[in-house]
Image (cartoon, rainbow, N blue to C red; front, side):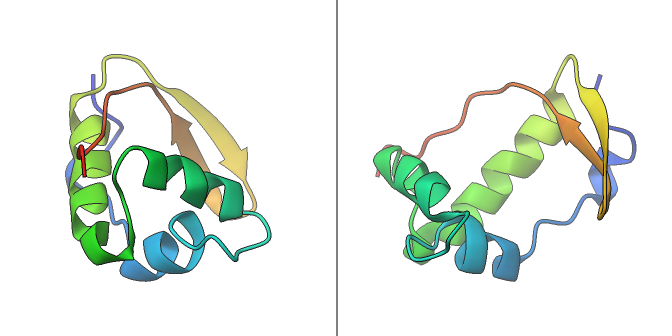
Amino acid sequence: MPFPDAEHAIVTQEKLCNYLLNPAHPVGGTKAAWFASIGYTHQNWEQLRSDLLRVAESCENFIPKSSPFGVKYATEGEIGCGG
C-alpha cells in the first residue's frame, strides 16, 4: 500500500541538493556519502527524486512518524542508479 496521497508527494531539488546530496552539510553529509556510494550526486538529483517517489508509490508497508515538519513516512525499498 503506498503512502497516503503518494501521488501528490513532493521531493524538492533544494532538499536533495542542499541536504541529502551535500557532503558538507553537518547532518546530511553522511547521507550524501551513502547516496554517492550507490551512484547519486548533484548531477543526477532528478533520478534520486524519481526513485524515491517510486518507492513511496509502490511500498507495501510504511510507518507514519510525527515530526516538527509534519508527518514523515518510513519504509523500505530498493534504489540505486549504478552510476
